[in-house]
Amino acid sequence: MTYLAAFPPVSARRLLEQMEQGRLSLSGGLASTEPVHGGFELVTEDGSRQFVEYLIDGRGVGYGVDELKRDLLTGPLMEQGLINPHPHGGLQIDRMTYEAIGKTGEVTRNFHILGDLTKGEFLATTDVGRCVAHSVRLADAIAR
Image 1 (tube, rainbow, N blue to C red):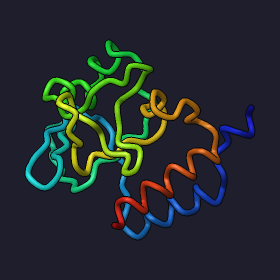
Image 2: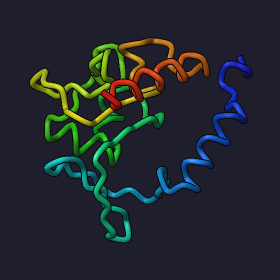
Image 3: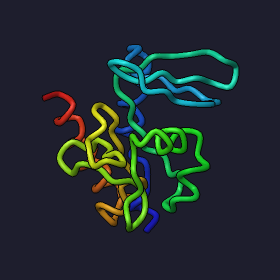
Image 4: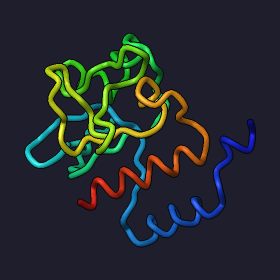
């Protein structure tokens, strides 16, 4: 099982390359997220704001409704109806684009979900092969 969840060095190098090119950044201290025209605004604990066109949540926040409601990213989005819990855990998504499905059943454009939050849809979400396959399909959907 250890090998299924290992982080391959080639992936680490790709992430580092993306960061060095300014195409990927990491931030901490997320306080809230707000959907705005054309994307999302992220607000950190120090009050700084950052606009992003695409928001990809690939963290392991939990699977149950209560955990999703308490989370700083998923809670506000749930309250606004932009995301909806999956009956089998995690969030409802469009299987082709990985975009969130909101409370009304409508797709939340440009809010893509990977990883454990897709557990209700895909069941196995943590092995490297599956993660790579989902990431490639998501990248293809965004590129279209």
